[in-house]
Each structure stands twice: as C-alpha cells, then as structure tokens.
Length: 82
Image (cartoon, rainbow, N blue to C red; front, top):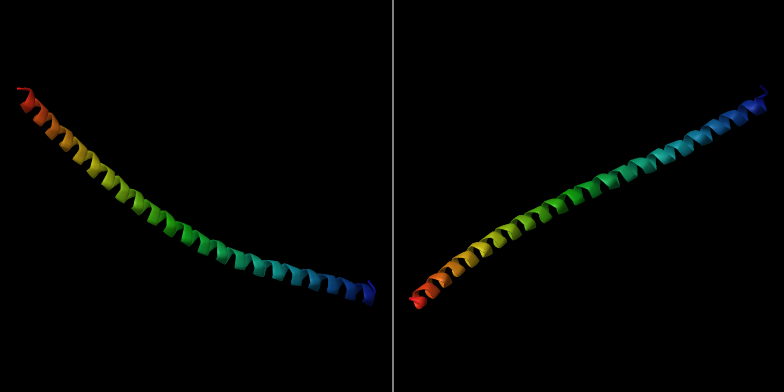
C-alpha cells in the first residue's frame, strides 16, 4: 500500500468515525427528547385517569340521587292513589 493510499484510507476512516459520532450524538439527543415525551404522556395519562375517576364518582352520585328521587316520587304517587 502506498503512502497516498494509506493516507486516503485513514482519511476515510476518520471521516466515517466523525459521521458516526455525529449520528450517535443526534441519537442521544433524540432519546432524551423521547424520554421527556414519555414522562409528559405518563403525567397526562395520570391526569386523565384522575378526571375519569372523578367523573365516575359524580355519575354514581347522580344515579343514586335519581333512584332516591324516583323512589320518593313513587311513594308520593302511591299515597295519592289511595
């Protein structure tokens, strides 16, 4: 191998190594962004879950109130029918 060929080969290897290092840096940066996004999505899911739980509680309370109101109305109607 001539010195010029050796120099070209080493230059190619160094350029390839530099491109690979740049790509790895971008991948690390993207991984950090993805981790941040995952944390945000997890927090959003927790907020939504909490909201749904409160909605379920409100819905059950409303159902109970409706049953009690209908029961009272039935009692009133039964008294009036006598």
